[in-house]
Image 1: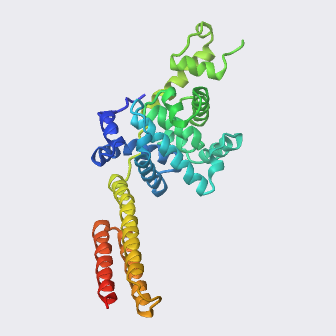
Image 2 (image 1 turned 135 degrees about the horizontal axis):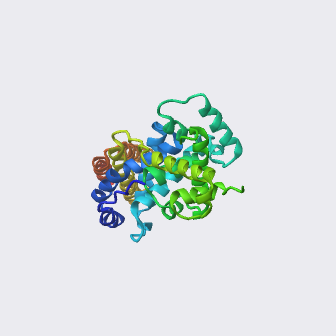
Image 3 (image 1 turned 90 degrees about the vertical axis):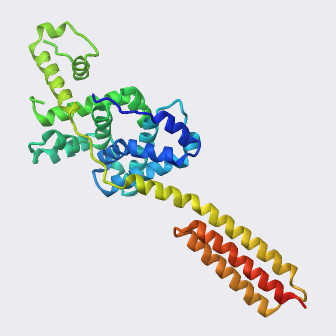
Length: 179
Length: 145
């Protein structure tokens, strides 16, 4: 798993919580890749993901007084971003896409079946239902632990592990035995 | 032969568990190896690059949102002051000309507030207060006998 770049977010987060805009601007610069990455993994890359990322940072600023300096800013803002992305899914009437159901998995299977490319892994991940995509993004691209992902998704660690198990099972099924 | 269940195979692949069954079962060893290959590939999955301008847009929205209370406060102050003055300088009951003046004043305040919300908060706030002051002064002059 990739290491997490935290730099000096903690001190900037403490300053931002007291209303320092410069510090908050640095936090946005530092975390925009992770925040956009998660939103894009849920919504697909594009304007929706960009808007969700922007809304997440604005919400983070508005809620800065409630930020607990003992927490990691990155995990906190990713939780807000995840909710912002789900809000957009709900607004677009796509919330059912989040549901963890056999139908989703079958639909993902069908979607993938006809489009095997040299970038098979990206395609396979993109074809997963959103709850698995976000777990894969946080675990493998952003290098977060199960405990951190549980905090971000506001779900029990056991649920996160179950989603990762299911995601890997689906990916293997789609990628073949070579995985 | 009873094989290991899939969740357990994945735990073994992640290195979170051990199981002597693997020493004797080629099929389960192959499954674990396949999950390890998948984990290695997933670790090389690339993040999605953000489009340019996200940080600038976030800070622009934050600045615009913080300007709104300034404009609202300017509107409130100007409105309260001008209303108080109109009442104070209303000597002999309703007067058509003063009603017109009052409406003009309100229109200018509303226009200033709209300007404030459209992105020039400090200038518009100052403008609202200035216009209110000018209107009030005019009303005072006209109310003198």
